[in-house]
Length: 416
Image (cartoon, rainbow, N blue to C red):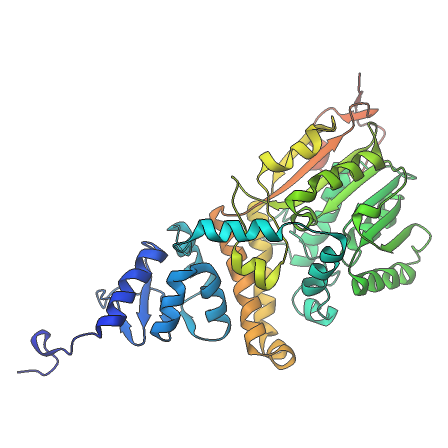
């Protein structure tokens, strides 16, 4: 008799078999192969499925206790390996509603405790994420260091072109006019502020709590000869003072924390009153839910990703008029795939500088984010708004997509 015939196979270890079934229940019915300590699920040999290999029973047990957090940590330190294209595998899991674990209410309760963001905590959280060396980000971002969703007007444009298209789309949505005063809350390395000043003739004050980003942005303004038009200020958005024609925030609302929306609303109302214009660009959700506990702990401490129903009261309660809402979800999925491709090319360099655990952690973050936007777990909203006494409101949305800046032939309506 063949020693490997069905009747003579060595029985699978009982513990690993039991854990394998339990992990499958936690992950959901995604078409992937699971393996624990060499013990794997039985599929036909003709099925070529991506595989998640878990190193030992202890890791499997931790996955059952807190699936999302342990998956991220175990992948980062190599106790979990994914055989197959990472983004595609994670998409399969997200679509099956997997990686949620058995204690979601406990995790949700913990997250409520860390959403509160004092000014000192906001600075600390920003330093953990954004104060990594600029060289780290320049290894995989575009040349202008734009760390927010790009806009791809054509399918095959480069990341650099798509990021410039995003900057100009934001400017067109704000309908910037030469000589206007603009305040930007959360400015990154300064690309939007510099673009607004150079191409639309506005004056900008841009605030950021990350000192290194402010230093880079200030040097860019000096190099471009825009230091008289753009002032980069190392300070928290809650300390913004003065009157402006336009308020803009790109990629900051996620870091405000739900309990501080009132603070942001007061700043918006105080700066543009009932006559100015504004734009919020932020990662959101289709419905209320908490951010991944692993992302909260390892990547974006203090972050909260709101549903539209949570973000819109910022405007409604201050009688701002919503002019336009656009969802760029698939543009962000594409942006993240572009970032991940560049990241992989610099993976060895990043590993040498920061260590393998860090490099794998950020790989998983970028891949998981791309999968989340592909599946609709995350959304990307741009909301354009104005005070109820704003003098000019576009008659149509055509000006957004012609790629033209303001011309005298454009027809406008005056607010009543």
